[in-house]
View 1 (spheres, rainbow, N blue to C red):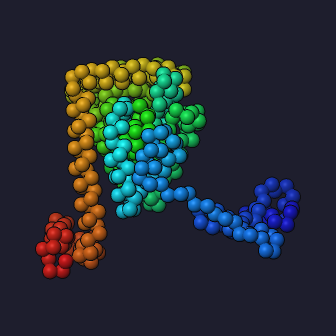
View 2: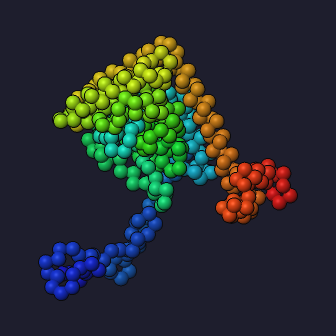
View 3: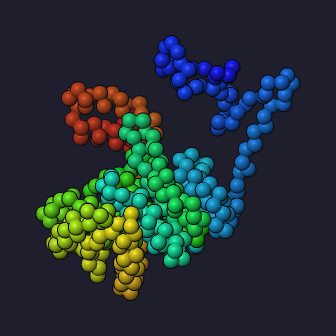
Length: 382
């Protein structure tokens, strides 16, 4: 054992010659994990840490439009930031990029955890790249309600796709957003479109019936299902099915192929009882295998047929305009909620009001009225 290694705390006592695990002395870490270690020799020069140069608004926009992946990543980070100075700069960048957006096909992909969304997206994305498309994948990862953290590990399941320069994968934490879609996903989508990606795939958390948010930002909504997830009646009860433009039974391979086809027939019958999510389009159920690629090409044909039909009828363009208007109202809601949370008068009394509600002294409606009155400056205590 060398002088700079030692046994870990969990090593067995006594003879440890056969214990392979060793702990090495580290180096002092500085900002962003960059070492401040100055070396063992006396008078050694300190390590120089170089910061990345700040980009101007125009430099961000030019880099994105040229397809510079490093600048694209930094632009998305800027868009996702909640810092006031970053929000203002991000909006300036988006104003420049806006004329170059809107040229992609936006596909939302959802399904229960374990249905194989990431594996499906890799197979689907590779197929699209082979067809000459540039693909952006916005993978939204669930956030812990306890720690608030996210693993952001979806990219590791797309090893083949992530190595291709014609694809850009960006994992983002879901945060507390209903529907499993990051709050800045819409703006991130616009940045990717300006960078030249003509297909944008949004992989959602997969939390079930609350994923209505993703429907309001994509052109085509794809619902992945597993065989054995329910019968025809159960299919009718699943509210999220009413939002789907296509339902795909994944993992239709090997011994599961027959079960997948049976499930497809069940859901196909169920969808006859549901109102179509898009005017002029009839949703159907399909099967595919992300493992063998069987049925993957057919799904893209369905999406292209959908775009052709809805573009001719004007529904496609109308949906895009309605989504933009809805986006405005959602941002107004977010802004008002933020103002309410930061209001000094509200912060001064909110703990006492919460305590009164928790102890059953004050009704919830009366508590809300008091808080709103303070927020609207109708109370002397505001």
